[in-house]
Amino acid sequence: MATSACLLFLLTACGDAGQGAPTLPARGPKPIVGVILPDRTTSTRWEEQDRPLLSQAFNYADIEPFMENAEGDEAKFAQIADEMIRRKVKVLMITPLSAAGGLAVQKKAKAANIPVIDYDRVTLGGQAEYHVGFDSVNVGQLQADGLLGCLGDKQGAQIIEIEGAPTDHNATLFTQGQKSRLSSKYDSGALKLVKSQPVADWDNKLGGQLFEQILSENNNKVDGVVAANDGLAGAVIEVLRRKNLAGKVPVTGQDATVDGLRAVLRGEQCITVYKPVRDEAEAAARLAIAIARGDLEGADDLATGNLRDPVARRDIKSVLLGATLIKKDTVRTLVTEGIVKPQELCAGDLAQACAQQDILGG
Image 1 (cartoon, helix red, strand yellow):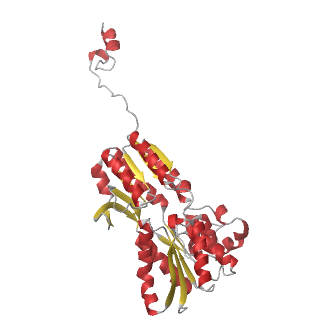
Image 2: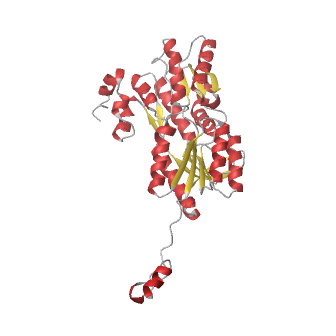
């Protein structure tokens, strides 16, 4: 009878020798975290770095990642978000393509009681509970400092600024940081600003076209270029090559992409700014995991900073990370830290430059 009772009441207490044994609850499905990456074209980082880093962190924590790429398409961004909300993800992490698109998604998530993390980019006027990203003002300052270092004591140098998308608040903050270093020099005449040109959607091809137009209107005279990221820097350098100016005109960048680092080693790009995507992805994953597990107090403990949204007039609980200026003689540090492989950097025409910087031996 005891055996029959055990079989009959398998999920109830029924232990050996008549002792009650604790019942183990049936394990439910894994919590799901939705992640929408923005595109594959403005930077290679999204698919080459963010996706695998986030996936690894979530899987290790026994959280199911539901990760899609919006391919730079607002309609696809909204469609992906709708599906994630329908699937009742525990938290939604987005890199918005625009403030309007981000806000529309955040309103739907809020109605479904799903917390939102703005990842890397802020949705101006939005409703995200958290933000994880870099100190973008400081990134802009590093770009300006790098340019000034490459220009040296040259007085009256003519500068063209090729900035990021006006719809991306990060681009606004990068420019703000640059201006904090360069505006006084423009005002004093130590430098001359030819033009500051934002580039819609961070479109590299468009950026190159706009730069070439500005350069032609200035009689092909330029002494330095502030390019907001490595993709735009690459487009600028292509134009400079055609004008036989590549390597003669300092160009800034950002993201420390392989192409950007190769341009730095080649001497065609003055500097790039390394933002440790690994740290950003880890911080975002930890925050999302805490929320997915219902530990909102723990999430608040992680988001120790605040980022001001001037449109919504509110402070967003944030994790803000630092960045590093990278020049030709410091590229090697990224190799020694395992951020980039020497074989990627040193292929083709760069073997000698890598040997000079002791990169192949790193």
